Every structure is written in C-alpha cells, then in structure tokens.
Length: 460
Image 1 (spheres, helix red, strand yellow):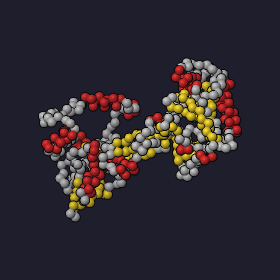
Image 2 (cartoon, rainbow, N blue to C red):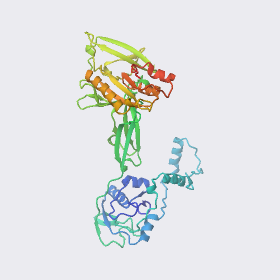
Image 3 (spheres, one colour):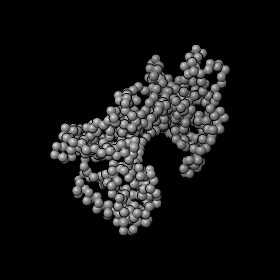
Image 4 (tube, rainbow, N blue to C red):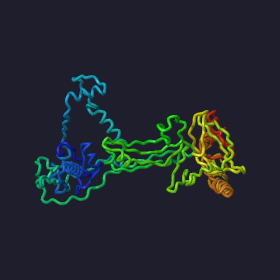
C-alpha cells in the first residue's frame, strides 16, 4: 500500500491541511493504483477490516520539509505483476480462447514508448480553457496527513503510509501528537442524462432519464445507456421490430462484483417513450399521462363494450409504418372516446402486429407554423404573429376545452418544415407564411406529408 499505490495531491496547488479529501473512493484507488492521502488510508483501513481486525484513521503532523513532500509525490512506482498461475491453467485458457499454445510468444506492449499517450495528453491539454492553461504554483509544505491505527490481538499498531522508510508500527518522526481524523469528504459525483428531440422541435431536447452516482459506485463497472423494448421478444417471439412502438429509457450499471439486486439498485429507469416521441407516465392512481396530459383513465378506460361500429381507413404515407384512422361509435352513432391500445387487436393477414394509440379523443391538436423570415410583412412578425397565434389558440380552446395548440417557428424552408411536422400527432397544421420558398418540393417531402392526415390546412 505504501510503496505501490501512487500518492496524488488532494488539492490542485498543495497537500490539504486536513487530510480529508476523497475523489474516486476506495475502489477507485485500488483499481487505479493511485489516490489522495486520505484515500490511501481509507483503502488500507478497509483491507484491515476485511481481515477482521479493528482499524480506524487518525491524523498527524505532515512531512517536515519540501524535499520529503517531493519524494512522496514524485517517486517512481515499480509494480511487479506475477500472479500465481501455473502452466496447466494457462493452457486451459488458451484452449478455451482458441489461442495457439506458444510458450515463447511475446506480449506486445501497448504504446511502448509512450508517444501516443503524449500525443493524446497534448490534445487534451489544448482543449482546456485559457484560464486553466496558466502555470499553477504548488505549495510544497505539507499539511496534516492521515495514519491508520489497527488493533491486532489486542495490541495497537500504526501504519504510516507517508513515512517513506518507517517499518510497520512506526510513525514519522515529525509527529508530535495524533488526533481523530476529520470526516472524509464525498467522492466526486457523476451525473448522466439521456435526452432526445423530435423532428418538429429539434432545438428543444427532452430529458428521458437521468441518474446520479458517486465515482466509487461506477469505477470498474459499466454504465449502459439503453432503450429497452416495451415488448419482451421472448414472451412474444412473433413480434417484429416494426411492432415495437414503445421503449423504456434506462441507465443500467453492471459489474462482475455485483449481484442482480445490487445492479438493480444502482440502475435508473425513465418513463416510457414512443417512436413518435411521446412520453408516457403512469400516476399512482393508474392514470396514464402522455406528454404530461391525461391519456388513459385509472380504470383502463377500455369502454370497448360500448363500441358497436368501427370505421377504419388506412394511411400508408409513411410505409412500412401504417397509420389507421379508427372511428369507434356506439349504438347512437356517437364517438366512444378514451380507448387505450389494449382495446384494439390488429392483424396483418393472420399475424398479430403491435399497435400504438396516438389519439383517443375528438379534440383538435393544432400545430401553428410561424414563418419568421425577413420576407414576412412587418405586421405579421414578432408581436403581430404572437397576436395571431393567441387569437387562434383562444378560438380553439373556447370550442374544444381539451384541444391543444402548439406554435413552432420556421424559416422559408416551407417544404422541409412541413415534412418535419408531418411526424407529429397534430391533426391540423396551420402555416402562417408569405409563401416565399427557399427549398424545393421533393418526392420525399411528398410521401412524408401530402398523404398524411395531419396536413389538411395550409394558409399563406
């Protein structure tokens, strides 16, 4: 521990005066072979405790002069790698890995001369902000340094990791008194967020899942960013990729030293998200929210028994994805609203296919595209455009309280903007534009929106 674990200064310009600084934690220090003074002491105390000995950490006076501090931080570390592995074990591994059994085969060192490492270090250094590139003065005076006290067979011993030549049980000569060590600081935090944006609003990403861990929880383990399918292919082997409409964003931690329960405790799951970009959240009472708005009632809102007639039309404008416009009517010919996906069963020939419901009530979802290009007349820009949008929004909401009105700013790339908007759940798109077009109508645009039911009103 003293000779083969490198000591890092715990502050950017000195060894701290309290010996309490933690960065990567015990596991990070052991795996990386380096740590702050307190991390080295915590690691040693942890190993003593695993050996069933009582151990704690004290603090004492630092090293007496700058030369000893430099020797502590700069001394080379020679780690001997000689695991106790016999030839029979090596031959078994070679056979399993289908590797040639050549006893004289040399292992090629990675970046033997360090040239690639130096090049990488230079590239990273060049990315630092200018204020961090100025030389940093280092104070070679030493503050308090930790010492491990261990009780073996009822006798106290001291393990001084920073007395360069002291034997076990001895402390450095400069120590006049030992005190209880201050509480160690927290390890460095790691925060990860997976975000996504939809085609109709690419400048406004939405957070799908976020997680926060201490460095010690992640060192030597994998943090996987995943979008898990909402359908288990092992339970439903006939399901195709096109049938999977819902995914669960997840940040999962995996490690050889963790069991299933521990990995689950370190992993984070987000709300379900559909391929169309909608977020689905289930409240405690069972209400399903889509993008924050109620979508399915707590009782499931099936209402299927009230349906006496279905009127269905197919839209293949985004083939191979097929959109069905379904009107569910009761005996009186009135619409049955609030039906969830579980109320429907769809087959392609005789094969069942997955289905995702994007709208289940007769409420307009209006998308207003606002042309902000300089060719627009001044009275329809800025305040004028906002007034127009407010008038439209107030009119829609007054007629349909559950209606939704969303505004999106565009340039004069009219066809591209319409093509992007066709992927939304809007059933009415209103384009406020002077008609000055910068782009061209392409077959891709035509297939993407002309046949889409959301494009029914195009105003200039």
